[in-house]
Image 1 (cartoon, rainbow, N blue to C red):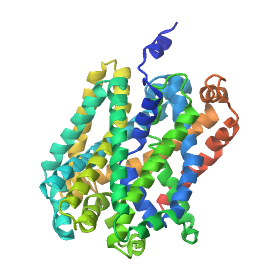
Image 2: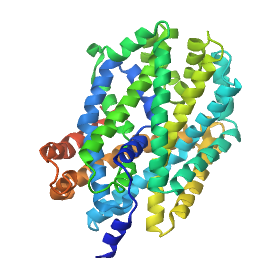
Image 3: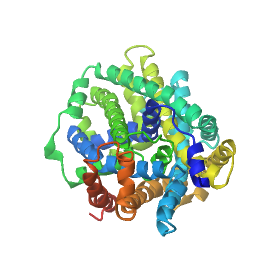
Image 4: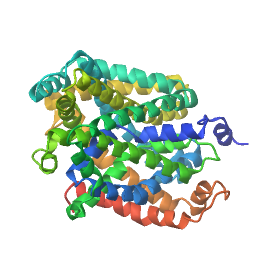
Length: 471
């Protein structure tokens, strides 16, 4: 038995099938599900967008997810080594390094926003989110541009992530996911039910579930395609790395469908949490969300840290302390979503450091935590463009990290993975992995190959060109 085969046999694995589903779903479920999906839904016509989004998940998302599953489980190694083992010394091996680098950069600004969630848990309890809309906006502006407070929460969040990752795959990632994912779902369900019981909430529910296809155009189609790619955490090495811990009897296709279903369900529940409450206090909500001049208030940090605290206060403020309780639950939910995603990004880099530099898991995790914390500190200091030495052009360092990873690296990484598996890797390799060596049915394999070779690359190229207004 050669050295590489021995390493594969000794490699850690997820202990249970439930652990596989919850941990991998946790890597996909993140802040993008809670704020980006509702924002995109509001901007693109509600229910019609959701239907198109689900179709895009099936046609684009699941095949791309399976790409990473196949590569990761076949190689049983970190993302860099996984691609290298199938690339046979060709430049294709660089895709793995590219994915790890992308995940590393994403962590640099993601830990900043994650830290804000912890601050807002404290603010919800202490009454810091009380007052009118101007007070809430002033609170966010004051906190996010403060030179010290956000840094404290960056360090705290990275310590939480480091503690889980350093405990290993089964005792750390799997155990943490089994605890956090049900809590996340329960919190989301509680807030969604509370929002749906508000007077006037039925308009928000109708907006979310009654499609109006007259509003569908090319922009809606491409936005849904982009959100499907963004929401499933494709192209950053997370799914490939997690798949390397899958057991050989794991049904990859079934797992991908289950994970995509959980991810979509949580995104829709997030819409059910936000839209009924929003419509309850804004009867003209569709006009507000479709107005491009107002869009910045309902997307990204503006939606989560300014608009929603005000919505919760107006919607639930009639009952003493209820708005505080709802805000507390919401930011606890956000923190859990952020933590499960940051765990997966951290694991991508930890596996790379540990295996490629022959470090113990604890030392590999420590290297990643320290480096990401340093980057997070600089990203935090740059937020809002208040420190000119951290601003390049019209973007802060925080904005540059977000732009480069989200709009450039992720689609490029996804495209390269499709081309690699669809055109370079022998089809027999993919077939063996998808069918577990012929023990499972392969009747949809031809459709999978067609999607990976043609539909997925075309969809990703369209997304890429659309976001720069080329089409």
